[in-house]
Length: 215
Ligand SMILES: C[S@@+](CC[C@H](N)C(=O)[O-])C[C@H]1O[C@@H](n2cnc3c(N)ncnc32)[C@H](O)[C@@H]1O
Image (cartoon, rainbow, N blue to C red; front, side, top):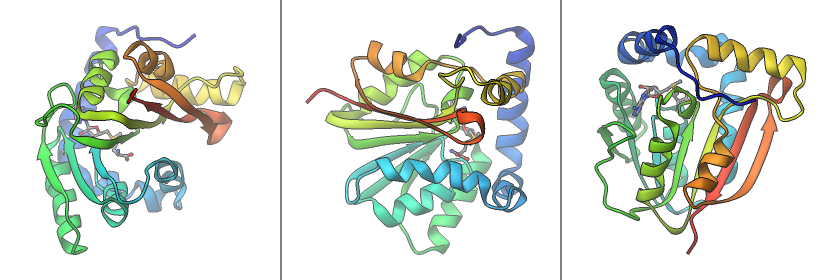
C-alpha cells in the first residue's frame, strides 16, 4: 500500500535533506551523475519524453539543474523554482554558462509566484516524494498549468506488481524521509486525467506519470 504517513523521525530526516543537503551541497548532489556512472541521469531524463518541444515549461524543484539545462534547449520558454538557495545559485550559473535562458526563482512548491494557467507543461523529477503535503503541492502545480496543459512527475513509488526488489528500493527511500505517494490518485482527485503511468528503473520502482488538465 502507498503511504502518506509521517512520523517525527521522518520529519527530522526531511529537514536534514532540505536544510543541509539541498541548500549547501548542490555540487555534491550534481556529482550523483558521475558517481552512478550516468545511471541517475538515465532515470531523470525520462521526463523529457513527455515534455513537448517549443512550449512554455515550468520545472519545479530543479536541484542542480541538469534536466533544467536540457529543458532550456528544448522549451519555447522556461521557468524554474527551487526552495534551496544553493540549488538556485548553482542552476542559475549553469544556465548562464551554457548561454541559455530561464527565469529562476527561489520559491516553495506550495506558493509559486505565477498567475493561474501560466504554463503549458509543469515538470518535476525526484522531488514530489519529498514534499510533506503531496495533495497541496499538486493543487498548486495544477493551478499554474493552463487548461489542456500537462503535469509530468518522475519519482519513486511502490511497484504495482509488488515485486521484492522494487518494494525494497522504495521502502529504502521511505526510510530516508520520502513519502510513497499514489501520484495518479492525487492527480485524479485534483481533476487531472492520467494519460501515462510508466514504471521503470531497478525493480520498476521509478514511475513517470503524466496528468492532463481538462481544456
Ligand atoms: C531530490 S532533489 C531533486 C532534484 C532534481 N529535480 C533531480 O531530479 O535530481 C529535491 C529538490 O527539491 C527541492 N525542494 C524541497 N522542498 C521544496 C519545496 N517545498 N518547494 C520547492 N522545492 C523544494 C530541494 O531543494 C531539492 O533541490
